[in-house]
Image (cartoon, rainbow, N blue to C red; front, side, top):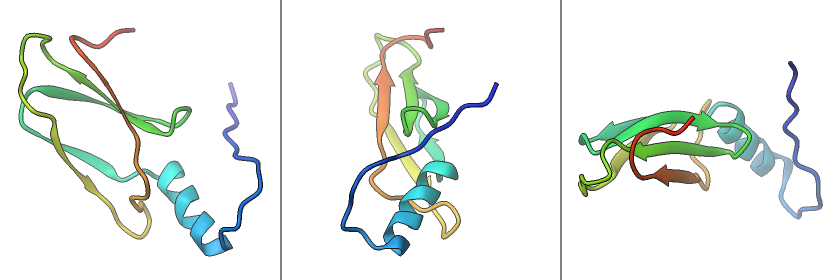
Length: 89
């Protein structure tokens, strides 16, 4: 199955700025979780967001992480989706 993800619209951004944004979506920076309260579920290209869920709904530990950005995988306006409890299918 082929899935297309495109952004259409008008902008005043320069091509270089848009190429950085495109790289941040197509090759997102690696998410490095710190602590044990959350599980990383990967990057959802449809939502253009990192998906995270709390391991245990009763555990109120903080969400701490780093994004390992680079020129090939820049960090630009990242988005995060968090959920309580175990991962839902």
